[in-house]
Image: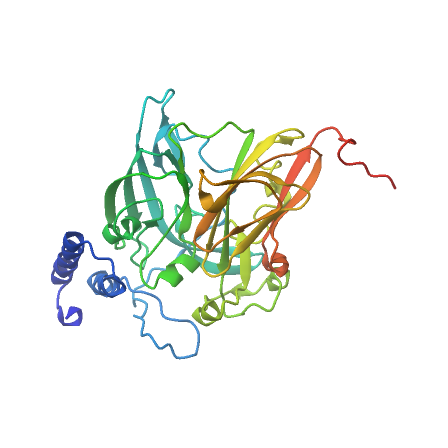
Length: 402
């Protein structure tokens, strides 16, 4: 039926009719999502990408629009873990800034949030580029922070220079598709919803436009942290980490260090289906949290005796994370992102694909600590970060002898 439409206006009218039906009957099925995506693509030439692999797919996918705009090239794809709101006491996130602060809370807030989808090209390792789809130009997308009972007044802006339709599924949101049913947004358009956050926890969000694995694997994900109504205890430092995988035509047999200067890589549905990632990383690329971007070097300094909280998401799209800090123990773990389910004195915590966790610990000894996924071969693919702690030696706890 969509293919028989002869004009853009008719296409848009048809799309709006389908969206209205979706809202009326509160249906979020794969068939309806696919129909929305196909109609949206024909109405605006915003179509889903084909598989880049030679193997024939058993599920037909629309081709890329002929007039596709060349993606924007950016210098840095990684959002640093120190880039997060210091509290839930703000009422606007826009253009990378958390603003309109509230000095004293007297109940729930209305927080206005603006996400802009940007399809970009950037280096994933030195001399090697990949196409990424991002919320606000970085991976992961912005961390949004609120409290249970707050409302989010959310705007999704899809840049007119993009090629594809996108949306957002907030795991924290109660309603069809976590909001995705009403957020499918064509290039050059804006969608808007308002939701109340009912349950505290550390929640993922991600694009759920079909094909969902493609939109997730390209980089469209982040965390929405919903604190309990009374907030969280004070700590000295907080960080925001997201583990993810990228699947390319090179497959998964080579280490990230061996993949420098490879030019531009294409994404691979084939290796995604085989669950053989080329890269497994924290915050968008290998070495994103090392060198001059090490925790405690980039941003604030971490001292012996300081307390640290980390909000950690694992988007997958396939693998389970075994998160570990070498030489430390987690004093508290918010299991599966729940603030009401806490484990104590934990060495390694599992984070399922599509899930999150929070960890807190105190650093007692100076030095450089390694953060990793203890599915240990993945360190070769890029799942390594570093934390530097400075201060006096603590020989009661750790004493080199020879």
